[in-house]
Image (spheres, rainbow, N blue to C red):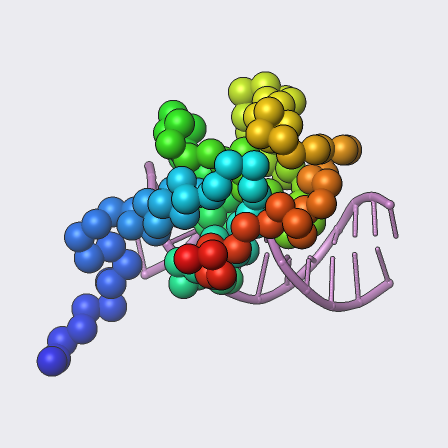
Length: 119
DNA sequence: CCTGTGACATAAG
DNA sequence: CCTTATGCCACAG
């Protein structure tokens, strides 16, 4: 096999990485939350947790992607600033039965949904 | 090809 | 507790 063009980033599917993130997000059960790192790890990019968040940035418009269920390792709603409403993210979570205090998810460990374990 | 960016994670002070 | 710094990686221009 010769010949390996160094550019193997996007063989044919542009942003396959993003789709992967969306796929996991869609699988997040109701009333549950997960972390960027967990998703990144599951898709094979544990060191690209930031990419996950960035992918969420593009998720705007994709109602199939509950980005509000994705928080940082601390269980803090770090990305709430990117939502339409400042408190929209929190409202959505509370609507699902998730208690939020000071932008932090209560019982985060309890509500934490690990794709690598659940799947 | 290089640069900029970004909703993380971790470390250090 | 806080801020600052670094790593890290994928995508867009």
